[in-house]
Length: 209
Image (cartoon, rainbow, N blue to C red):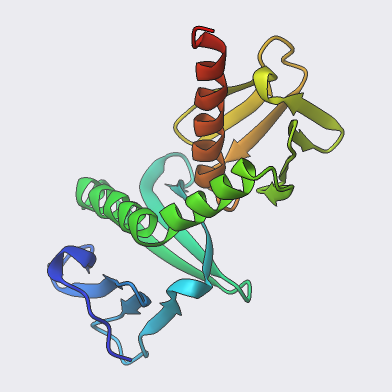
């Protein structure tokens, strides 16, 4: 399949030691192509319509007594629950900054090309008061629920951190749910959706009558 993609939608990943490019990612309207430039393995193509979930994080690479590296990882899941993992391994700080930037660039390309549409889809469901589930959190016309907990829209608060965030009651911290960007699919979409809804309801309360 021919993918139309300009240079701004191509991310090249250099090897850890040598500057040779060992992998290229092509982000296009049709979908995502992952090409292994130093391998005879066929390219991986995921059609845009099949891309449904993602998660991301950093794993520490540990030795017997100390941490000696980092693994920057992004995982993409398709409609058939197949998972494609993109891993950037930095040892002894070699290419640490470069891989961190590439990891961030991949995230931004995924969001701008595919997942912002998923966010808009869920926000539209919320706007028309449709019941749906996102990352284990159920959305209702009145608010959200999970397990045996529920919160009205005006009760929801978020505590945001680098690797996870907490959904909780504004006053009662016993009603709380932790969401991990690395372990929970589409956690970032859930965070963005809740932020937008909370801002919307806060503006209702502060607007003059």
